[in-house]
Amino acid sequence: MPAHVDVYFTLMSPWAYLGHDPLVALASKHGFTIGWKPVVLPALFEETGGLPLAKRAIQRRRYRDVELQRWAALRGRKLNPRPKHWPFDPSLADRAVIALLGAGKNPAGFIGSGFRAAWAEERDLGSRDVVAALIDAQGFAAAATLEAADDVVAQEAYRANRDAAIAAGVFGSPSYVLDGEVFWGQDRLDLLDAMLTGGRAPFRPIE
Image 1 (tube, rainbow, N blue to C red):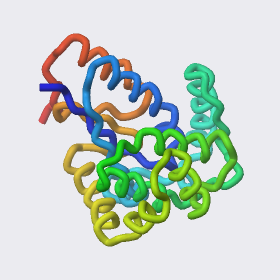
Image 2: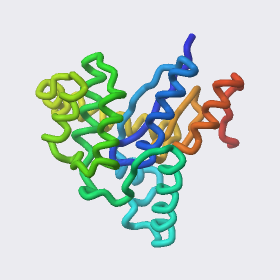
Image 3: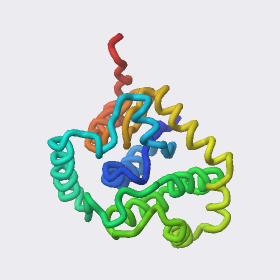
């Protein structure tokens, strides 16, 4: 049976942006399926002890900026750590992913275009018009997708993803979960690759 990796993320996360293409490449390499699970990051932080960026110590914020630049250079990705429209509300774009999944569509292309729009192209991903344009560009019906994204079903699924993340031991974006083992951060994708390559059993927390 093919492996399955759940990815908990939000389109407002630059780290998830940096990990998106490598994750898709790993899925192609190993043949695993991806469970795309957008989460409400502030709500996840509230439950797991995380702090929003504005409340972190200045040293941590400065280091974050340096790390983003390092990893963007290593990944060969254009990235502005302080894009024009940041911070933005990612909820509509995140729920559009849920709506596409509900319609039986593969949202990977839309997710990638959303990340690029926010972090490389200086576009406002909190704008309904921008999200609609990105959906259209992927060949999907924007009006129907956004209507589904606004529906209570997508809103409840968005909240349920947060609950599932907490139950899985997830506390940040992106987090990749394979057989119950959590890999937090796009810089852990090599470890996920190694697990899949070697076929080892998942590690568990020591109680």
